[in-house]
Length: 615
Image (cartoon, one colour):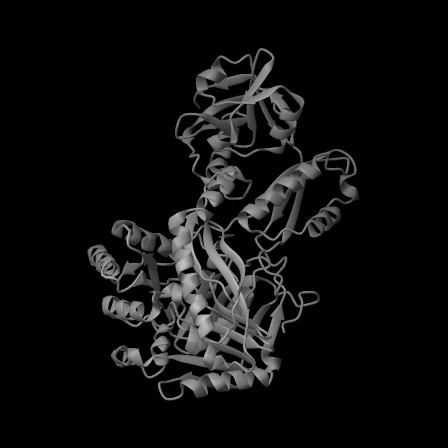
C-alpha cells in the first residue's frame, strides 16, 4: 500500500522530476495529480528483473507477476492490445498475422527503488515553450479511407455481426523538444488518474489515460468502462445544463450501457458471483475541457482468483473493441490491418494488496533514435454513426497532444489597506470556484499562510496592490506593490480588437490574457485609463482591467456574463449596493448614457470623464 502524502518529499519542480526519468532507461513515473488525487506520485528506478509475455508463456508470465507482487516487489506491466489474441483459440489465425514474438513486458523493482512524492504546491519549473514542439500529426488513413471503413462497420452492424466497433487509426508526428517537457505540458491539459511517463531502452511512453481497465484491492475487483464524451461550454454557467443533457442522452447512455453489459458478462466468466454492485451508472466525469461518461461496477473475487484468470476473462477491455467482443476483434483486425501495440492495451502497476491497470488511450510512443512519435486515435461506431463526424472526432482527439493549451495560472488582484485585504473573502470565493472549474489544487490554509507571510510590517500603512497567483498543483505566490495614483481624468475608448463569447478564458481570471495585456501598453500610452471590448456580436463586454456599468436615470445597466466577461469582485459589490440590471449593451448605449461607471476591487466605482467610440 502506498504511503499517505504527509511528510513525503517534494521535488524542486515537476519538470526536474520528469527529466530525471527521461535520463535513465527503465525508469518510470506514475503521476497522481494532487488536484484530483490524494495519493502520492511514484517513481520507479533500477529494476531487478525484466521479462516478456510470449505465445508460449502466457500463464507463467502472469503467475510470475503475481508471485513477485506478493513477495513485496513493485511491478510495472505493459500489455499490448494484441495480447488479447492469446486468450482465445478462435483468434489463432489473427494471432499469426501479427508476426509478433512479444506481447508485453513486466519490469520488476525492489521496494528500495520506489520513491514517493507529494506534488502539492509543486510548480512546473521550466516554463512551457512558446512554440508548439510537435509537428502536425499525419494520419495513416486518408479521410476517404477512414470513411469507407466506417461504412463497412455499419454494414457489419446491419448484418448482425456486431453492435458496436471501436475503430482506430494511427497518426505519426515529430517531436522537436524534450519528452519530459511535452509530458509536463500534457499533464497540465489532462488531469487523469492513470498517467505514466516510462523510459524504455528504445522509446518513451507518455500515457495520459483517463480510463480504468480494472483495479483489485484485496478481494474486490472494480471496472469503470468509459464511453461517451461531451465538450464543456465556455461559459461556466452552462456546465450544469450540458451535464444534465449529456447524462440523459439516450444514444450516449445506450453506448455506455452496452459496454457495461459486456463487462458484466466478463466478470461473471471470472466467477464473480451475482449480484455485482453498480457504484455509478452513466456518471459524467469532469476533465479540463470535456465530460466523459463512465459506469462503475465492483464485485467480490472468488477465493484464490489468479491474475491470469482475470486477464483471460477480461482482456482486452470491451470499451476498446466493441460488442460482442470476439467478432468485434475479428472485424477490427480486418479493417485496421495493423498492430495497435500498447495503444488500447494496458499499463499496470502492482504492489502490496493492490493492482491497477489502465486502458492505454491518449498514449504516445516516441522513438529515441529519431524523435518520431505515434499515437492511436479512434471512435466508437454504432448503427447511426455519421462517418464524417467520426473522422472529425478522431482529428479533434489528436489535438490533445498536437495543440495543447498553454499553461496558465489563476490569480486575484486585491487591495491591501493598512495590512488588511478588505474584500479577501470575495476573492477567495472566486478563486476557489475558478480552481474547481479548471481542476487546480486549492488549499485555502496554504493560501492564507502565504498571504500572512507576505504581508509584513512594511505594509502596515497605506494602500498596496496584491497579486495572488495559484499554480495547477497548488503552488501559491504573493506579489505586493505600491498602488499607483489614479489619473486626473478617467478616459476610456473601445478597442479595435474583438473578443469572442466562446473564449472560455474570459470567464475566470488567469494569466492567459494575451490580448488585454498586449493592448495595456497602448492604453496607457494613449492617456486612457482602460480599453473596452466588444464581442463578435458587437455587444459591449468589459474593460481590460474593469467591469462596466451605465446609468440611465436611477438604474444601472451592465452586460450579462454570457456576453463574454469576468464577473469581477468590484462588479459584485456594486450590484449588491445599487439598483442594477443585466442587459446587452452596445456602443450607442454608452454614448447616450447619463453616466458610465468602471469598477474593480482595487479602485472601486469610477465615473468616466470621457468616452471615445474608437481609439
